Image 1 (cartoon, each protein chain N blue to C red):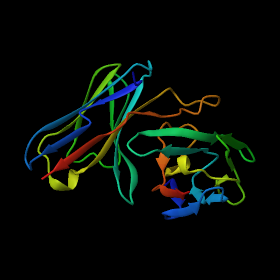
Image 2: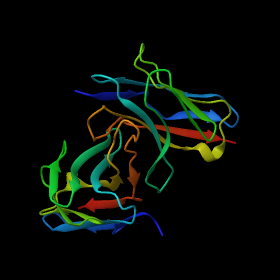
Image 3: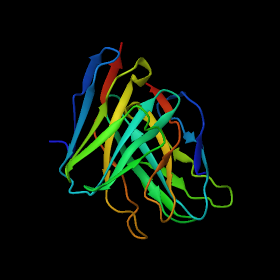
Length: 112
Length: 116
């Protein structure tokens, strides 16, 4: 079945460091891919998305590129801030299906 | 006001008690979902509903039931709560996912349930 694998956390960085959170997926066909973010005490919210191979999603300085050849959708940010501390979830939705499949989440902790 | 509202936000109950978590939305979406979040396990789908007359089991529906009272309301019940149902529960809504609409989920702020 469809699945999403994320790197385990927590990821601990200093402010202004470069961030990469790895995400790989297994799915039939060409799924849409998503990154959701969960700030402390809040629900998840969509951070960025990509719908086809080589698409790059971007938002709030975060980027992720849909790599079909490596079945990956790694999240990157060039310079993290303390306010980026949150849990990040990678997810996929297979074309023609309506349910999202989530990874287990990666907690990011950014210190001043 | 939030587009997706969950009540209660926090609840502590005892084993064997009946608990209902309620969700209402102003997004106008037909599709509603209940997820459970546990540390290290991510989000797991409990039930989902694509319209008022459509209810479907998710991957972990045992011990839960749902009711779709209206397009805007979707409630989750635990008929006889047990300690391993202690978790953070999220309601979410979406539009139909199509070739041009990715069916983004919109989440409530969560209901934290503790079963003693």
